[in-house]
Amino acid sequence: MKGGYKIFWTDHALGELEKTIEYLESNFSNKELERLSQKIENVVYLISRNPALFSKSDKQGVYRVTI
Image 1 (spheres, helix red, strand yellow):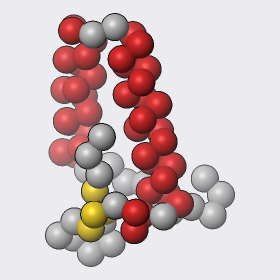
Image 2 (spheres, one colour):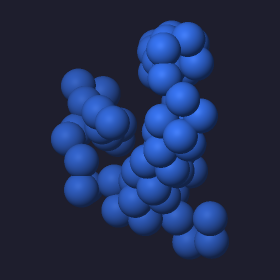
Image 3 (cartoon, helix red, strand yellow):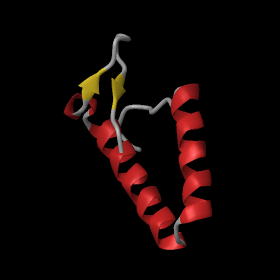
């Protein structure tokens, strides 16, 4: 990501992502998994370019987004 901000995932966010993927693997097709992956990649890119597009968290310099 040239010129972008570095993205750090919280343990909570990674845990939620893992649970979401497990649920989708059990209940949805690979198409839904691919759509989620594409949305995550897109949002991570947007955050890296301009984090102010999203809500600030209670922690300084941290932004959050729900996908």
